[in-house]
Image (tube, rainbow, N blue to C red; front, side, top):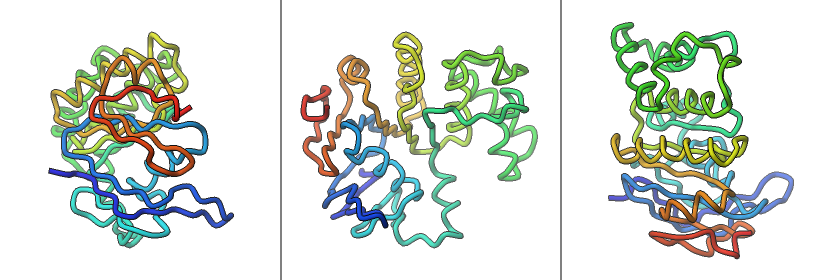
Length: 232
């Protein structure tokens, strides 16, 4: 069953730049998908449309049965609750501990303290950081900070995890460690993962679904793909 479906989607920014041209796409539940392409290919625009940071100029963006493009601004939170987002730059709150950073999202939802504790510790265990609950972000390596960001994104057990260049600030070894964490989440939680990346080595090693964009157009969608030359 498809979790995401894009129908005839186009995105043109106010400055006249056309980022996406007539994009049709279907992604099933439980998939692990890489979105690849060079600079200006439309990777980030696609990710942003999925969590309604951007709206398509034309077409439908369906996420979990919701037509994201038609969502009123005051209802966007309903979509965001169903998904987790991981960015390249971690975006942790520096004055909060690891535990508090991950718990923050659940506190905003008004969850009970006992449920928050259970979910936070489970999320931190899943990313291999249960021993760092009292640490602050500046006491962690870049790889560890990204693990905290992933824990925060999965703490509410979303059906969809969107990752925008999550290994972009990490060295190759730490990048592969992050990918192992994401693979485990996909496998053990059944979370659908869509990851925009330019890391050729990761894409070629993991052999997941690959969506290739070039200058805003879909040029390839393979079930077990590699980093195609046309993406560079």
